[in-house]
Image (cartoon, rainbow, N blue to C red; front, side, top):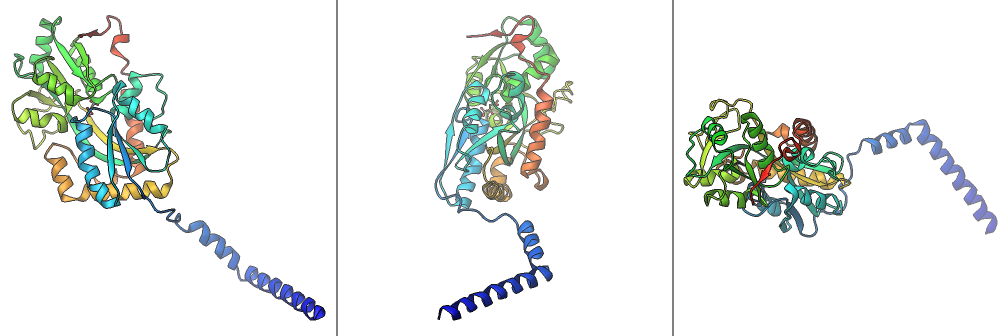
Length: 352
Ligand code: MLT
């Protein structure tokens, strides 16, 4: 028996050797190796299997919050899981962004970042502890939003030139609201102030939602807000819009001139909001979220909801993670020269 087993084993070894040689000769191993190398990444473990949190870096009721609620409603249905929207305010949106970079990179904590958190905040906070490119896994662009210059109804100005003139005549009294250093409202109005040599007192809020309420109440004089946040108040006449920062007028506010038409062509800005995950998030999770986001942006109901507020839906070629990386890089370069105004000679006055 032992002899028979020993010879069987020898035969089997020989046979395996022959097969291996045949495989090598026929290039099977080479083909196998090539197949492994070119097979798209495996689907990965099921995702998502529990609720996802999307952090909004500003107060409820502002444009980032509104956009997030519109889009996550669809994403939750598409992904089959609940999405919790958490408002984490402070430091012009950077508190939330820092929180997102420190979350587990598992797809269950995401950030609705924007032109501020991933662009102008770097100019406002030179020591910022995150890198908007290296510390995030971009998911995709959500919406583009022109910025409106809006004033309280009682302010005796009707256009941008009026605002600039009035500000120079009432330099001691003019007050601007914003959502914190580095936020979109802060960066864009700082740009306007630089162009128009406006030197306002400033008041920071936890988002442009509460800032806009202060404007309606007449506690501040003007601010720059994304159209998604300000348009409803412009339509009801609670605030006056002097100009829009885009190249063309918005179809939802056709009477509001572009900044170029209002004589300030260099006030041209397109803000945006986009979804980010912490760096290290698995590729299959990024792919799943990007696909779900694309589905949401093609949904007629979502397009109607964002469009009715003046939001511009990104085109198909603007929706990839790599396109978003390019946008972030351009934004960082664009705002870099804008240093903190209060660091400049003369300083910035703050109204309490
Ligand atoms: C908000 O949602 O309150 C705004 O996006 C804040 C900002 O101006 O950046």
